[in-house]
Amino acid sequence: MNMTEIDFRKLVVSIEEDVIAWRRHFHKFPELSNKEVQTSHFIQNLLEKMGIPYQRAAGTGIIAEIAGTGNRLIGLRADMDALPVQEETGLEFSSVYPGVMHACGHDAHMAIALGVAKIFSQIKSIPFSIRFLFQPSEESMPCGAPGMIKEGALDGMKHLLGFHVWAGLDTGEFSVNKGPVMASADRFKIFIKGKGGHGSSPHKAIDPVVAAAFFITQLQTIVSRQSDPQNPLVISVGKITAGDAFNIIPEQVEMLGTVRTYDKNQNMLAKKSMKRMLKGLEDGFGVKTEIHYEEFVPATYNNPSLSEKVITILSSCFGNRAVKIDEKPTMGSEDFSFYSQKIPSCYINIGCGKSPFFHHSNKFNLDERCLAIGVEAMATVIRYTGLCK
Image (tube, rainbow, N blue to C red; front, side):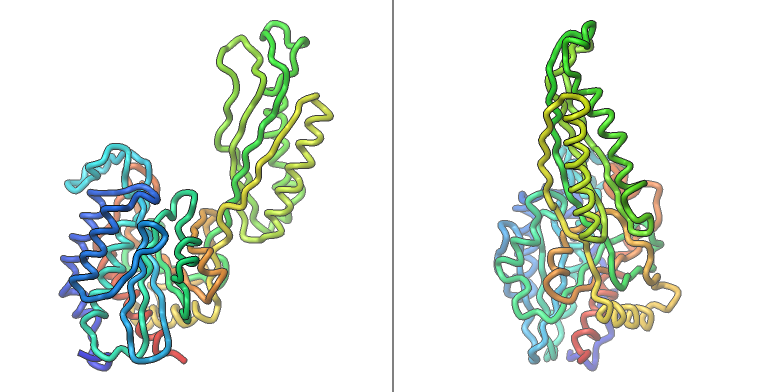
């Protein structure tokens, strides 16, 4: 079979049961970030059966490649890790591991990428090469993408495609943005140190809890009064730790939080403003403060020219109504962003059936019809972007 004879829809039908079985296997045996050992072995065994050479990368990651006849190299990335979530879906292939679940759809991503690999492994004389990146640790630090890049994942690559099954879209729908797709995610840890004492005698202590409460309220004025309201910025405190007893003023408060935006200048605004506010807290409350601010993941950005091609391809294959263009980007984050900073990239959302249980819910599930649709979509996009000049 060569490229001119391909009927992707027919090929997808022939492997659909395999793709569903792979997804269910991954779902039943999930593994956390940077611990995807058995997941990696399973993928390697399938690649060997398909006759696709591969190499290990970034610990449990895999770089596999189907060599074609031309000098154009197209990449497809799929993430591998599960989440520390106790599954409550009631599925017959539910996770066998307590407290670990594929609650975001990475099980589907691996299965779809393997389906694409199986289709192209059956085609002769492909006029371009295809590299498959099975990446560990999308969900946690340290992220897997920088390690994959360091070990050559993008070397010689023309452009990279990524995708996510998406519960915000009906099965058979897609969304493609030309520009920002997901926000950056910075992480901060703040210590506010006071002087402990008895709750009955606050005048003899320096209460870090009151100072922390004031700071948390003041923090939102960065968004509401210092930031351009047309340039999204989110600052959220997710964890506060202080004290051990109801009647003791503690020595210290520790808080953890995140900053989300699409614009690097907004990250800088948040960081500088937080430091200035903490200095004011020291002057006003007599506490000592310490901040550790970490740039966790940059914003994910779709190359406009490549995205335009992807939109055209998907619209031709699935119809104009199926493709949502420039939907509102999410304030969630994705380490696909590290790739998109290096080479032209396009990240595609694939509808998996709208559900009240969204990604990361312990009841998250997907319409398995999206698997075959995903294989056909990504194989078609690879085919035509690979042939484009």
